[in-house]
Image 1: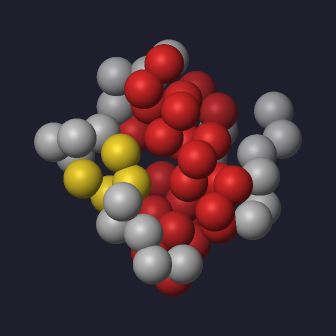
Image 2 (image 1 turned 45 degrees about the horizontal axis):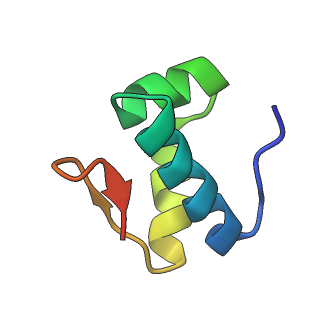
Length: 58
């Protein structure tokens, strides 16, 4: 699956997947073969922070 490279589109994509399909960020990354550390770092560099309690990036 191709994921968006633009950080704003990526955060929207990840949040939608977490809301609709996956119960955790770990499950999403495992299923989509993504490196969780790289994903979080890329989104953090764009100003987004992950909230495990809310299961979403802000």
